[in-house]
Image 1: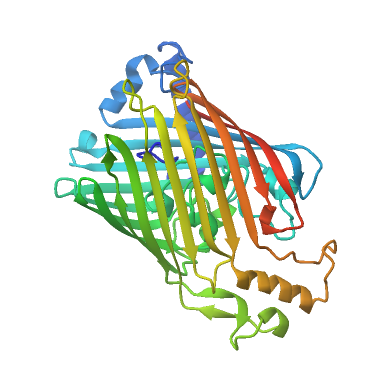
Image 2: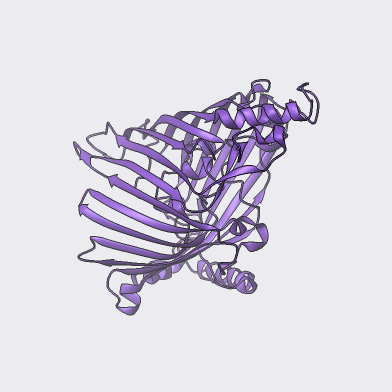
Amino acid sequence: MPDFESLRDSAVFATAAHRNILPLIAGLTALGLASCVQAAPAFDSDSPWMLGDWNGTRSELAEKGYDFKVDYTGEMGSNLHGGYDHDRTARYSDQFALGAHLDLQKILGWNDAEFQLTITERSGNNISNDRINDPRVGGFTSAQEVWGRGQTWRLTQMWYQQKFLDEKLDIKVGRFGEGEDFNSFPCDFQNLAFCGSQVGNWAGDIWYNWPVSQWALRVKYHLTPQLYAQVGAYEQNPSNLDRDNGFKLSGSGTQGAVLPVELVWAPKFNGLPGEYRAGYYYSSANATDVYKDSNGQPAALTGEAYRSASSKHGVWLGLQQQVTSLASDHSRGLSLFANGTMHDKKTNAIDNYVQAGLVYKGLLDARARDDIGFAMARVHVNPAFRKNAEATNQAHAVFDFDNPAFLPPQDTEYSAELYYGVHVTHWLTVRPNLQYIRHPGGVNEVDDALIGGIKVQSSF
């Protein structure tokens, strides 16, 4: 069953100055290893951490409000059949997340207050980039979701959260991404079309998902215990995407703000949890039309600059619901989910996206914590964006698909994934998966692709 109360931004260690990162990481690692010498057995399958409880020190620190973690995600992808390049190979990408969560009520006596710091490091390569998708236009989904946003170190979270009015009002301020709170979705699948906040996947020029952070404010208010509304304001600053700006704190380069609003309902039907989301986002920054110039003509043909719009917007819907369970264990059973987004047709390459799927946890009594998941998605290209590619080819008098200068028009991409999650221990899950991509990158001439993958998630 998807975990409705957690995202992949699970607690990780961070720092505020780039020059101090490596010493801090080395110190934290040394502390963990030194403590493990006298801890309960390392690699204990019942421990939530690979390095154990440090002879009780880790639990003792958590009781005092200090929670330190080092998490790892690794993903392998291999093009088994089809795609743009039939030369078979494999790619591996991964992410380390290091961080600390501080319960300030326990530490400083500040009621209902907490603080989070996060550093992430990504490295590796993605099979989608040079084997599955036509490199002249790239793709939309990614067979390895952990790849992306620059393979580098980043300050991913640095926020303070305070609750008021008997925890009805919740305010968070600092550096974090939209997908932590808005349009949130778990990330057990390996294909990007089924992982995390989907708005950030299809409007990524303004909505920055993990691991990118920006200055932000989020205000949440619980109307009832099961229903809350929230609104946010996020710095829209494209320079935050640059590899060299992973620890940038200044606001230089800011173009505007992304303002999301969302209503979230988390009911229980027959004791089974669900989550239903509906939201809208608005960008105050100027946006560029994907097709026309200021005179309403195809800019690729006239040679004039693409016209500018004063804003950009879109909507999303999401649902997750557990529908069955076992009398002996309500954590086991079938859960269904679906997500959809719609975007501004004047300024966005993708105009709509839909996906749906299911997850069954504990299918076998002997493997009660294992899960199996299947999902399908459709990514649709804005017709105006496609017309712009056709106009570009016309302007350059290039009409042969095999010509390197040809810009393939893109239409609709379909994705599907089937995985089985083997919960080897409490701290290690391995999810082999098969992915099928029809019309990769929305290019009809590219062969449908079959991808074999393995996703590894571990907590040290």
